[in-house]
Amino acid sequence: MKIRRLIPSPPYSTEEWAAEARFLHWLTLFWLGIGLVVLFSASYHAGAVEFGDGFYYSKRQLLGVVLGLLGFCAVIHIRLQRLMNLSALGFFLCLVLIFATKIPGLGMTINGATRWIDIGPFPLQPSELIKPFLILQSAYIFNRWPRLTLGERLGWLFLFLLTLLGILIQPNLSTTALCGMTLWLIALAAGLRYRSLLVTALAGIGLAAISVLRNPYQQSRILSFLSPWDDPLGDGFQLHQSLLAVGSGGLLGTGFGESQLKLSYLPIQHTDFIFAVFAEEFGLLGGFCFLLLLATYSFLALRVAMKSTHAIQRLVAIGAMIFLIGQSLINIGVVIGVLPTTGLPLPMFSYGGNSMISSLLIAGLLIRSARESQNAEVVAIPHHEGESPSLIRLVGDHASVATSRHRTPATGLKGSSADLPSTDRPPLKLVRRPQKSSIWKRMMAKLRSSRRTISAPTKRTDPRAVLAAKKQQLKQRRNSRFR
Image (cartoon, rainbow, N blue to C red; front, side):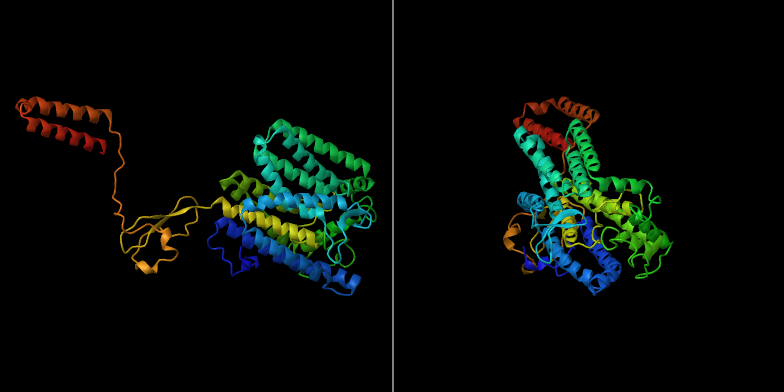
């Protein structure tokens, strides 16, 4: 892979990509640009109050953006087969780091949850970084599920369950539920038995219920969701302020940077509730445009999955769509009071380097699947001397190669001359495809041939006449065969 391909903008070109890959590429960068602008507005006041620097959160977010874009550009230029070879290593490494958060002195607790590993100025959140590896590994395993032995199936199911339990005990019920739904939907798309999927879904619901019963803060979130106005200054304060921010935006919003609820009224306004600031500043129209962006992105992802020529590409596209679009819709549902409060960030918007890196890697996987879903083999057709070869694309819908012949000098062809057919070969000739004639035509042909043989009995005695008659019959049969 060339180093220049790690740059997120030209010099690498997208002209030869499939249409879906091009649209997803530029739509991802557009989504990222809007997210950085909204984060600057939502975090400026908090940075100025907490650290005396309004650009504090924006500058730290740029570090995650740079690392995420490097991974994004690397993923879209590496074949999925190679990425599959690295997915197991990344999956096991992130799984070990998830349980390492429980080691005293290594794990970092924020707001009652131990989800980070304290590594200098850039803490790691393994539950976010494992998402792209979880997509790749689950797609690889469930695609090969019928060919796996019983021991291998139980082993991988145990590892996936161990991953979900490790995230759940942090505690992080929302991320656990999202990862579990992604695994379940990838397995459904891979064609696993409905009975097994039903049992797995019931077990997941039971595990979530046990987690809610054991954690009082999760119960209070559900109760405040059911009636946020009963305790607007207590458990329902966050949702109450979020609804005020969304409602204050009106139709067109208050304007960029003019949000009032972000001024120390709305908690964590630059992370989980950043969409409330966006809705207040850009109004109902801005929120509708963002939902339209998500709808376009999901439509392109589904189109990639439906047009994929290989099951791996389809499963990776489905997993990437669930993590990006599903997580976005859950976050928006929490902000507007449709779903209970969770800790899921809004991809490309919320502050957090780990979430940004994970989101960009997942978007890169989706674009890579789109590029490989319509790959086509280009072959050269033999041509006359002095003409360039006619190239034909065997599979694919984006015609980026020539399909007509044109006169060019022999030295003007690009590429290696060894790849083109030799000009010493004879030119191709038009050959008619043999078509089966109707029964009526064959009966009339036999009748005409029998009349000719009966009307000329004298020719049978002459060997030359007999030979000429046989040649005539063979010629007539050949003509009727190719007619």
